[in-house]
Amino acid sequence: MRKVLERFVVFEGLDGAGTTTQARLLQQTMQHAGQSVWATAEPSEGAVGRLIRAALRREQVLEADTLAYLFAADRNEHLFAREHGICERLRTSWVICDRYLFSSLAYQAVETDPGFVATLNAAFPLPAWLIYVDVDPLTCATRRAERNQQELFDSLDFQRRVHTRYNAILADFAAEQRMRIVRIDGNQPADTIAAEVCSALGFQPI
Ligand code: TYD
Image 1: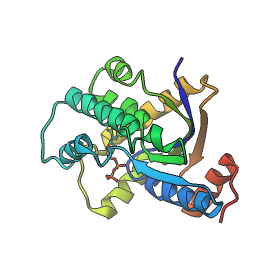
Image 2: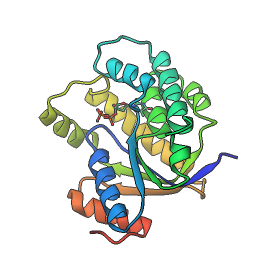
Image 3: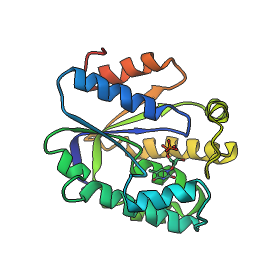
Image 4: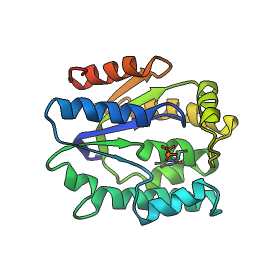
């Protein structure tokens, strides 16, 4: 049985769903409530994460399965790095992570064998909270167009497939009761979403 990490909160969603904004707002709420919080993201800022970002910017061309290995390697380092990894931080604080293994299961499995991606990620612990910010692919595409940054997974067709995969992944994990899944309608205003996130986690919105 997979380990579940208490006080570990993960945000997931399509590109443009607003996970980064929501992770920041939750961090502020928790800090306001006097909690110690470390906010982080995947791909991480470590050496493997930097290589992944070069691939996302299309500066480095990599095979889809190579990218799946890299995301898993980056995650391993992000989790278990001795002095500053997620597990170490969880000893003394909450950890909020913008994307985690569910992104690999959703994105990499569009272009590689889903079983292979699941195997690469099978040993990683689960978060106590998975918050899925659900926004339809077309709305996300409009938001991304405003940002004017072209990344590897930006096409609407690809994001539609990722969206379908997220739905399947959430259904697959629904039976895992130790991980609480919070699915939020991300088409609402950011502060409405933030209030829903807070109340799910038992915090008073600021
Ligand atoms: P994103 O959160 O959009 O970062 P940024 O705001 O810096 O652009 O994440 C980068 C991309 O990486 C996004 O398209 C999702 C993708 N991704 C995967 O394909 N697999 C993974 O395991 C992770 C963590 C991210």
